Image (cartoon, rainbow, N blue to C red; front, side, top):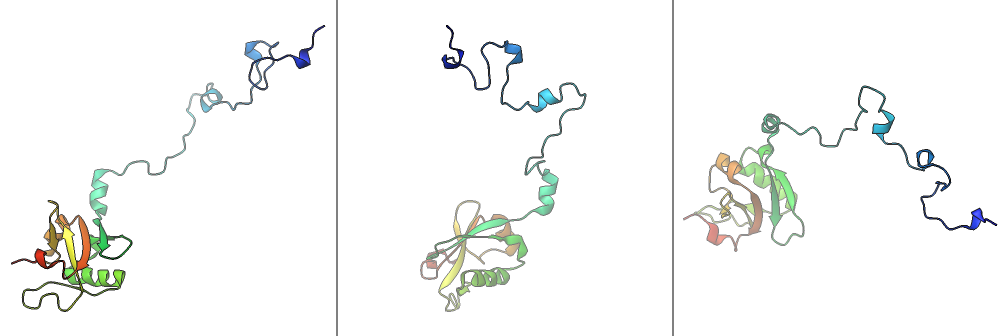
Length: 160
């Protein structure tokens, strides 16, 4: 006496051990290669986000110079595009508004103009310099990071 309903068999769900391997029933979806195997043209592929890559000549046209900006005592960083600004005063005014503080520029005669904070930057060589020490174009090309620090801590960075 055979008990087909109670026999234990190994196999995938939806398959019957008595059927041949060519006629097995599966719950799998057919791949796109199997669907279009008879057609001459390939299946259309979904476009990947960020594809195609931007060519180098297009990158030069867009050329944004984003740098991170940190402030002593602030718990967050910001990122700004330096190419938006045309001079140090414009940049410092934007930083004043961004961090809600008064940022001064160092001058030998007046110091920091009574401001509590001063803008410093890290150049290509990894040296920290005062913003305003070099011409604007040189600053744009060499700035890697900006840091707004207390004026009392930045005294050692001043040009002599």
